[in-house]
Length: 450
Image (cartoon, rainbow, N blue to C red; front, side):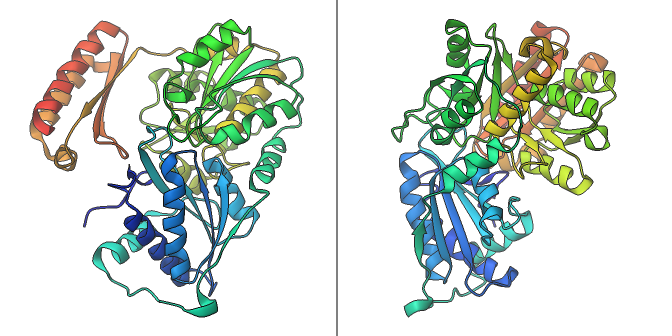
């Protein structure tokens, strides 16, 4: 049985790979699992979505599936993913669903499911949903009359979420001029109000979604526009979000990018100084830069490493009681305030460090030295993805590079959890050397898996 859910929910090209039929089945199966795993005889599920043209279509399909099994649905409209994670707890619902493909182009879409506690659905419950859909292990109930689920719309979802963000700091940022890149996505409904109410002067770009321009040459995956905006407008710094606003990358006043590793480093060091860094530990993935680990050593910060994926970072944090974690890509989790990555919350926390220390973002970020890094994405077939771990020639190529790098660098080759890609990442002291070695491994992957 192939998995419907990857590392970040179900995802694919909308209306083909992620069809209305499959979306309805996911909704129906999710409601059935809720009936088995909650005390509620009539589950309540809220649904949020990003700005893609296909999100309305999938919202209707998922809602129909949920209602057909007797679950009631509350539509939040366009909201960031972390808003769903917050509001499912705030409104005391049994589950929350976000329709989004995050940073991917507009033709993609996805379905993420959150539990009543705001955490993403664990693998075992995703497996139950998959078995219902693929193995037809359960016959769905077919309630009639008043037992059929009903759909209502929320009028306060965005404003309730904004108030939550504002409660995460007691600081006023009057005197700061900042730029915000909303990626024509979910943060378009909230970012301007959030940061204006916090006192900052805001220059906002890419906040006019039209259904197809989400993530297109903008946002955290195309940060050049924000870099230019910050410099041209004389901003103190800027923040770029992705399509569903669970990621944040920053830009300092010179136009230099401050990635997730640096943002976590800055915040973790400040939290440690304030006595708020639980167990003096930060959680990151194996993709974090070597410079991050050196920074932690120098500042007495313990570092836990997980597999790639913010869900694995979160699982580690939740299990061990840590307070901050995240990814180089900009997923940053502040467990005191959120149960998932939240781009706008991360920006607020980083701004708070800037204000509290009186330093510029550049001064804070430059305390961490970044090792040169090369990332090569190799497009492969689905069959190639499945046999990546078993290919001896790829394994040999990786081992040869490891020997050549020794203690001066590292190589990490992994399959993407959300796209048909194998990612080849190298770090080291010599940029030209790691580029050459990376391309040699990428060529082997291409020959073996395409």
